[in-house]
Image 1 (tube, helix red, strand yellow):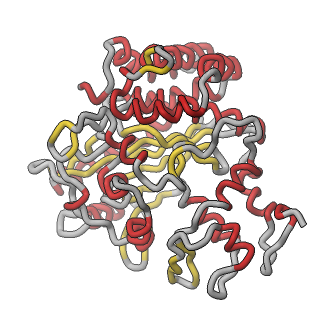
Image 2 (cartoon, rainbow, N blue to C red):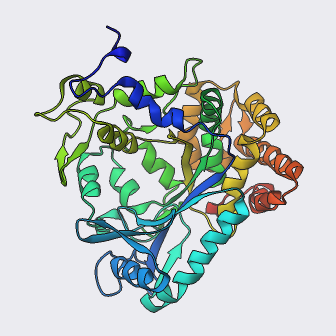
Image 3 (tube, one colour):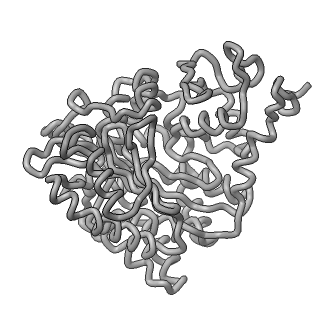
Length: 419
């Protein structure tokens, strides 16, 4: 019997694994954004602890009361807040993440973020905390950053391998963008293109040069940390082959080692002992696979571009000063315009997987000053931004204005790390 047609004892079927991706097909063109920032003490510049009278837990508690947010709890610990479809969560090293409900326009994203920032500012001032827009903590290193009390993070910290996995978890902050797809073909086209764009966009937004108070020699130390974290679940989820599909992505996930499962309010650690395919086939210590296990496993897979019921693009250092809104604008202009997609494909399709993969390492160190086949990455970046700018200009919603900060940077031959 073909594996794709087989069932486990509890009848978790292969087609159920595909369902989330199939249900993601929709005729919308919204843009989503997750915005992580690093909380530091205004006087010392050190990363703020979760604990203490002026720690991040108390900040969340006070903001929930002031602005009518609901708690997100892990056991009895406050690990985030929720209001309707927007969430505030703390990443492993207390990074403050805003997850904004997908919007029709970048202006709507900006308005929601600025409103939340405005509302929380008095509490930040009271606590002596500032959110900084950097891709890595410029002063405090992971040895002095305690994990927040979330069970999942403790398990991940013990499991994830790679010489910079602790840096990635505790020190880094990024911006992620979510885009919609209409069909499987549309999803795969955008997924492959986002992966091809990845090192160029990483270069454009490189903003993690200083770490531990010293110049690291890298334009994006955050990108370097991801390159040195668990390459079984990080990095690329595609090799740009013609057979990429929802099914191929599911098969890749099936063959990825599992970290843990949840059962009746307790965590069962698997620590990579088996893949999800093996778990479906044979179970583990009496436990059988269910759809919640699959959703958790999918969420513990961290490629640069992740396929969900939308496409999640994850490879940007945190930036500020208006640059943060140029990131969703860039993708909106390209991914929701067939002419723009075709133009970008013509520029990037000629590069092989090996070249794009190698470029990931080069841009972490040199950013836009890297080269591919002798062509300056900066020049390709400018082409991508210009294509997006023209696409947004055609739509007539004035969203091309959000690209102006990154266009000015590229014109001056600089990245955020340079300023």
